[in-house]
Image 1 (cartoon, rainbow, N blue to C red):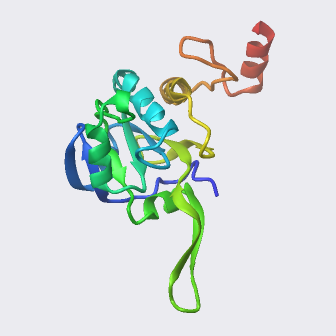
Image 2 (cartoon, rainbow, N blue to C red):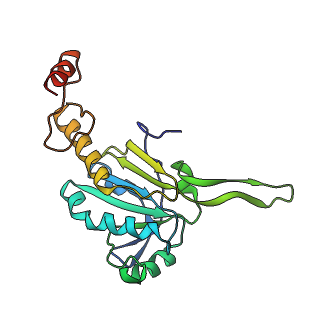
Length: 209
């Protein structure tokens, strides 16, 4: 299932913001009409690839904010787990210094509704919940526009870390299209020429490249 072109699933959940403040009922709805959103899921706190990604997003946070983009992370860990990981120094494998919100998807419903949950579950004959798979989030990323619509999604398997610069490039491409109406060809970066979405526009672009 692809969410591209559809409204992002709504949710309210506990989250840790500003590197240590736990809040209730965090929602992406607060950004509608105000900001684009990069929402990314990661598998688990206190692991190996995950802190490299969270620090990489923090290192580029000013670039996202300059583009009026909110960055929000989410995993199926608890808010207490997020808080504890945020207190641990980077040199010890922690994510101290990360300031953007980290959502606690403890019911796993947020990841499930975004089609980012690794594993399935069912109720057995004894009315017990049985899970097939680890029931944690894939490395999924969504670019959501100011109308709350998903415009880009990317899902990596657990061992495969993401490229934060590519997330910035996709933001630039979407914002360029929104502002100029032109479309962005392969390998487009901010400052490159784009093309008009017409036969003549494409032909002229290809003739120059």
